[in-house]
Image 1 (tube, rainbow, N blue to C red):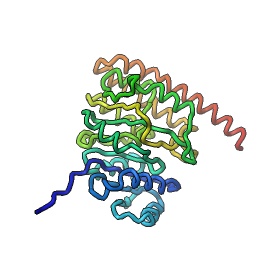
Image 2 (cartoon, helix red, strand yellow; image 1 turned 180 degrees about the vertical axis):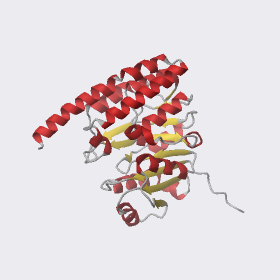
Image 3 (cartoon, rainbow, N blue to C red; image 1 turned 90 degrees about the vertical axis):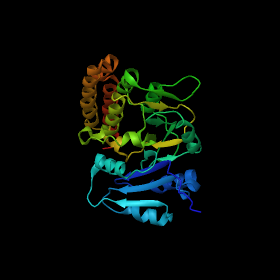
Image 4 (cartoon, helix red, strand yellow; image 1 turned 45 degrees about the horizontal axis):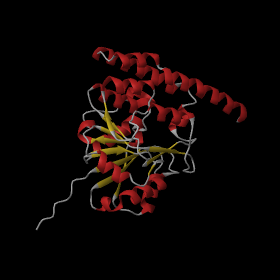
Length: 295
C-alpha cells in the first residue's frame, strides 16, 4: 500500500544577510518547537543565504539536521530581493519569514493550529521582545506598539480589516514582521516592493489590507521572541533619517490610495504621520546622547 506524504502546513524561511551570532539559538528553537513535525514533512525549514560570507552554511552543517534546507544566492539580492526569493520557494499552506536572530517560544505550534481555523490571510500571534542576551526587553517603542495593537479584553483572536485597521496601522506599525504567519496562496499574488526600502514589510501588509484581505490578531501569551539588539538593522536605521523618510514616503502614498477608496480615517492618519514623527524625534535625542557619551 502506498503511503501518501502529508501536505506541509508551514514553511519557515530564514533570509540571512550578515551577523550569524544568534543563528544557532534560532535553529535550536525551531527544532524544539517543531521537531517531529519537521521529520514528518508537516513543517519545512529553509535558510536562504544572502550574506557576503558563508558562515550560515557551516553553522547549519555543524547543527547536523538534514531536514533543514540551505540555499545560497549566487548573487546578493538585498533585503526585498531575498524576501522575494523566499516567496518563490515557499511550498506549504502557510509561510513565515523568520529573522536569524529571533526564536520560537513554547506553545507556538498549538496556537498556530488553533488560529488557522479562522479564515484570514495574515496571522499575528503574541510576541515577546528580548535583548542581546535573550532577556525580556521593555522599551518605549514596544510599549507603544502594545497600546496600538487592537484586541478584545478577553484576549480572544479577532480578524481585522478595512479602513479601521489600516488607519491604526498608519498611526503606528504595531506588528512584528518575523512573527507573522501568511496564507501562502494569498501572499503568492504579491511581491515585496524594492522601492519601499526599510519599510518593505509595512508596504506589503498595507497593500493586502487595501485589497480587502484580513489579519487575525492574538493578544494571548507570547509564543515568539523578537530580538532588539545593537547590531540589528532596525537599531541601526533608527539613528538615521532614512527610516523616517521611507515611512513618510510610504505613508503619503498609502494615504492617497485610501482616499481613492473613501477610507478617510486611513487618509487622515497617513497624512499626519503622528507616531513616526514622535519616534524620529526621540531617536534623534537618543542619538545625541549616544554621540555625547560614546565618542
